Image (cartoon, rainbow, N blue to C red; front, side, top):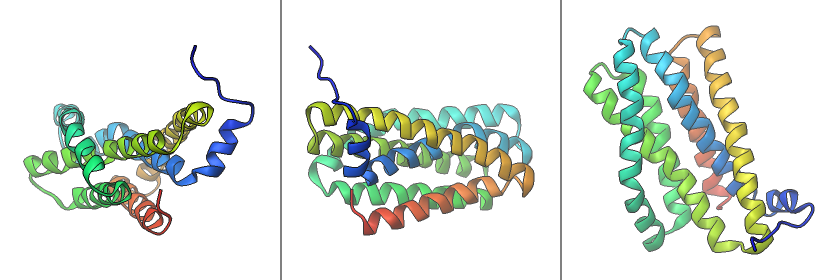
Length: 191
């Protein structure tokens, strides 16, 4: 029979592992910002709708192929270090997008964004499985779902609002700066 989380376990987990929850929130934010906000960004800065759709495919496909490498790195090196590197790589890649002219370069950097940001979730899940069991593991998984959902709303709504209020370039720059702030926090408060 599956393990049940005791009453109040969700809040206890969030109190016990706030950085893990933040990692999943950052993933949800960056993932949905890339999928929804960046597709609109590409069209608004002059790329075709076909390019925007292709970019989303390029974002997703390398992510699946890179996960074994990410898993290997998590097994062989510092899990906090992998998390920090992925956050930094995602931040730098988002910040670079507005300055790239070549569609090929944009697609390469966009693929890096997909790999780096999805790896954040892999890092959080690995650390969760290492540190928790039973009801707290169930509570951790539930809190990750909640954090991803909140991050998704922030990524979609936030980037849409910034695009309308400021400019399309505000989308990748704000997501990059958000990931950079997240990475700095995680460097000082290890997961």
